[in-house]
Image 1 (cartoon, rainbow, N blue to C red):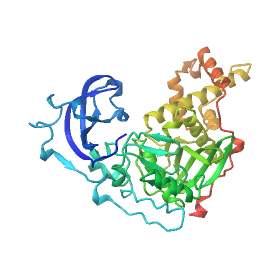
Image 2 (cartoon, rainbow, N blue to C red):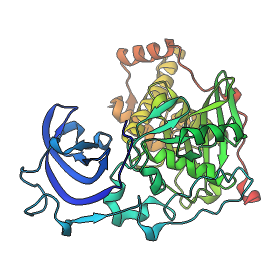
Image 3 (cartoon, helix red, strand yellow):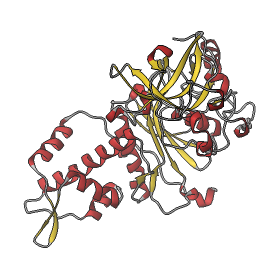
Image 4 (cartoon, rainbow, N blue to C red):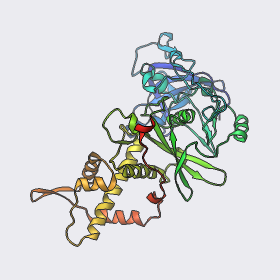
Length: 422
């Protein structure tokens, strides 16, 4: 673990051969930045020609000079030296100075965890002119509860935190601090042992809390900063007022520990007719591959059922998000079809709208899933759905597994009439 980090210097347009440890070979890389770590110069490289890995920015990394062939032919630019002054631009801060804002804090309330105000003035989408800045992972490591996590992407934490080997977060209020000593002192005073919202679901060790972005601004902003470390394709909004956040936690005798969340826009704030029931969804890395992604998706559709609406996630989805949604749609729709076939002695009949009404999945997503499953066939002037033995066995295998599922009877929630409260 490095002990001393220098400021990041951002570079433009330099591509050389770089050695990539994960594939154990030299490959084309784009050098985006450099900095000093423990007195040694390292360069931030985005690997270009790794076939299936080429679009995976999670593989971007800081590497030493001896893993870059500066004598190789540049793929971009035409200069005589690796880093000429006219091609180098320096940012002492994680985001441009002109785009800093100060978040007003009210001393003595939950909306004041005394965290330094993040840089930005509304959304990362406003930083289009500083693409090089946002392409470089600027936080080395975060400590959240009992986990130390290596981030995947850029997040606009204040500049002084980008110079630390590790950022410490309170797992209950998500305040970020510079040292473990400061964190311990904060935990002695932090009044929370769970997210500061209404608990709307509890079963066994799983609890879900609804956070209003208008009432809990600082918590919501800190949640977005944390989430941006692991989400590449979502804009990060500091105006959290239009959003509701559904935070999933694992509970024990010490408190409720965040495992992930999804957000959605309040109905009164929607600017279009799209039936979005999820704006952003994230399972933190230590809790991935444990079924939480599916639980969050299932929970979002259970809320849509209570609202009497169909829903769909906002696009574009991240690569992991798309895989999770496709898996959920396929399992849910196949389960309905297989159960329908078992319950009926005659050939059962079901329409796409019937599936929508049973699941609250939007029609376009149902049709796309049926096509992906390749179950739609045209027979005697009508479309029919054909499921084979393998599909039936896959559903039976999935149902036989002791997976945790959302129990609708444990949801303590009803839609808010925002026209009366806003």
